[in-house]
Image 1 (cartoon, one colour):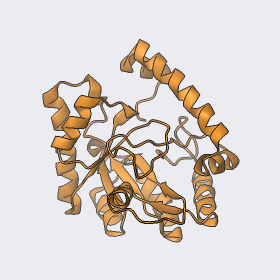
Image 2 (cartoon, helix red, strand yellow):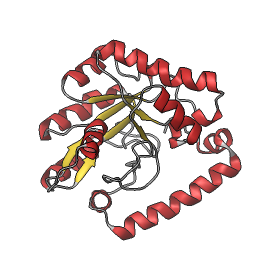
Image 3 (tube, one colour):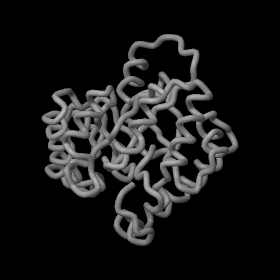
Image 4 (tube, helix red, strand yellow):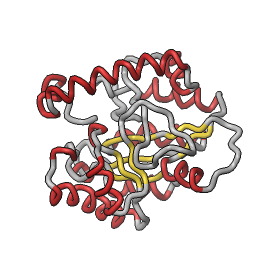
Length: 246
C-alpha cells in the first residue's frame, strides 16, 4: 500500500527514487504484480501460479502517483489499483479526471477510497451509504467501467461496513491489517502492508518475500497501535499523530 511520492513528508510518504528501486527489485525477483480485481478473479478461478503474487495499491489519488509511479509500472508491465478519494479529484494534489481515465485506459484498476476520506465506522447509515455509493458513481462516470474495489480510510471496518459495501456493489474490500492473502482469503477483509518512508530496500525485500520474523514483528506493533486507537478513538488518535490521510 502506497500513498504520496514526494521528496519529504509524513511516514507514509516515500521518495520517487525509493519507489523506483522497489519496483526494480520486484522486477528482478520476477514477481507477478497485479491489481486487486485480478487477484479476486484468480481466487474465483484458481489455477497453479508459479510466481509469488504481489498486489500493488495506491491510496488517496495523489497526482504525483501518476507522474512518478505510472511510468515505473508500465516499465515492468505491472498491474495496480489506484484507490481514489473523489473529493480530491481536480484539486491541487489530486488526480485530474483525465489522469484517472488515462490510468484506466492503460490497464490500471480504479477503486474507491470514499468521497471525503472519513472513518466509516463513525458514520450513521445514510452518510455511510453516501460515501460508498457516490464515490463509486463518480468514478464510473469518469472511466465508463465498473468500480468494484474499495479501500477503507484508516483501514477501519466492521460487519456493518462490509454489508454496506456489498450492498453498494463492491466485490473486494482492502483493509490496513498486516496479513497475507491467499485463495481462501475473505475478499472483504484483504490485508495490506503500508510502505513507509523509513523502510530500507532490504526490509522491503523481506516484506515481499514473506520473511516470518519481519511479519511477526510488524503484526505485533500493529496490534499495539490498534489497541491504542480503540482506547483513544479515531479523532484523538489521529490528532496526536497529525495525520489526515492514511
